[in-house]
Image (tube, rainbow, N blue to C red; front, side, top):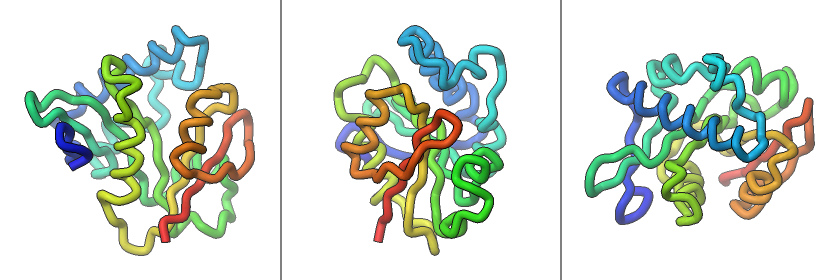
Length: 172
């Protein structure tokens, strides 16, 4: 459980359309805010391949207990993608011990209710991956609110690469 009203579950093929719709809605919202970090989705380009990530068991959904409605989703990769290798460096010493967060989304109608923070806490405490002791993520450097959010969640700023800020949190 993420909290009393929201539970987490690994996404299955029956979740693909809902997860894609929530992710696209988030991309539209970001665009309206003047942020272009997910604009590729607005043109049908999904560099994180949500469908493939679901098939690989990397996507988790967050659902409302009362009506089973989708309120959030996230990709948790146990191996670095080509994007991660480019951003963090091919020879990063922690690639094998890291979980990589991508496409964290929440239902915008629930914004400012702490759901994003609760999902981040679930990622850190609600699931365990053998041999993984850190979480890595990135976001565009010009999204001040999101950068502040990750710092407030206890992530350490690890530098910038190609207009993206990198964050990491050691779990133990």
